[in-house]
Image (cartoon, rainbow, N blue to C red; front, top):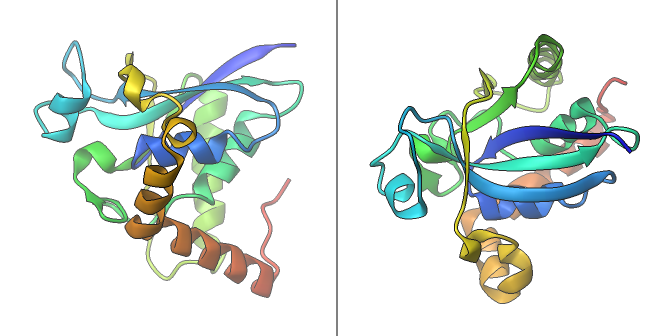
Length: 184
């Protein structure tokens, strides 16, 4: 097994964590904060915009079972990649989407997937996901780790109420209807 890491900001990290846990080959996921210039981050400061960090997840994966590309494709199918102001009812810099790269290959993969997504015909607005170099990652507080598993009812109400679930289901229906699949 060869372990690698990837970092994604997909709005609320509870949802991003839970969605990416479904990818075969993912070993572990840690919600946290990244992208800011401050030397530390915590939920209260990030949520009240006292830092420039975004909610994000660090994904540890087995690259003999999956790849940065496949995880990124799955990630893009579970966010609104056209929303430049946050995700669903979570608004602000701390909820903006990003794919973080640690080398030139990951940067190239991320950018090419965004071009492919923009040309797919699924969305009628431009793609607004940032592609950024990896910055320090600060692990979120324990109450935010595995949130969906520890708080299934609250998580379900949050996800449904945010509009994320309906949006993702609609995108899947459009992909199926138009027979749009990711290129290998």
